Length: 342
Image 1 (cartoon, rainbow, N blue to C red):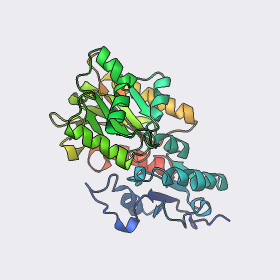
Image 2 (cartoon, rainbow, N blue to C red; image 1 turned 60 degrees about the horizontal axis):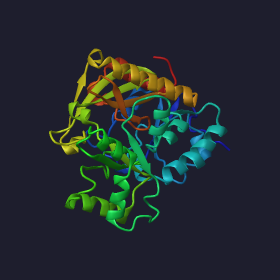
Image 3 (spheres, helix red, strand yellow; image 1 turned 180 degrees about the vertical axis):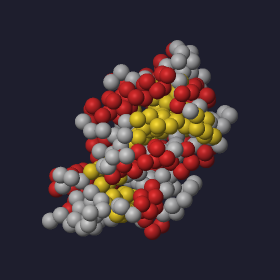
Image 4 (spheres, helix red, strand yellow; image 1 turned 120 degrees about the vertical axis):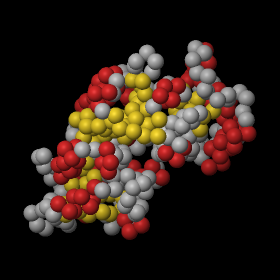
């Protein structure tokens, strides 16, 4: 039996969280997209619910009772690399079959695909530029007994071999898990054949602790020093753009590593970035047969003017609604989440 949450004419929306909602500090900079539930609740024409997806009482029948479900408050889902996909497959998917009217934004098929950065392989096959990337899938299978063995395998990576042969990559390769966020376990390995103490410590930690997903071996993109463009899309429209710039000598753009962020007018975004990001959006919507309510496409511009897509954020991207989105954009998102017209 479906337990219908919405018992009056006001539509309901469920914000899924990873943490217990009672423990969430809903304010910037502690929580991204933090204004959404309170703003919707203040409108008075929608029932807003916030529940943790790890709550066992959130059964398919209960989920099917909500009119709308969104992941935009689902911070840190990646810390549960097995449980989160299991929730999607065993609870949210069945809920979709129980209710023909329940809306999930974004589509749960897109969300499942976006949980693991192996999706980059699909994007590359579709004809888009990504950083040269290898995925080492057996890192957690005890196939590497020593740091030396792991370093040797990394050195044989086609990414590293190609970069050295072309003499185009004096920065080495970036290593990171394919399931992660906020640069967790992300490391720049400059000289795999001449490991320093920091390199050894990183590889030892990988062997000791394992990683979530595959180990990505990714060519360093020098263009990151000029800033990474984050193009925000709401209901298929490119609404605003942020540029994240790493600190001098750093390759990670996050604020905790000294990165800076600023909004730029969409007219100042390189045409290659706008065109490519829009085509990636079209590719995703065509592949999954469903529109995207929101999405962020991150990438850099190489010296030759081409746009290299670094990442797609279609689960819980920071949309910078709090400070960098105009009222029209916010209204567009609210309407998208609730399935109404602006």
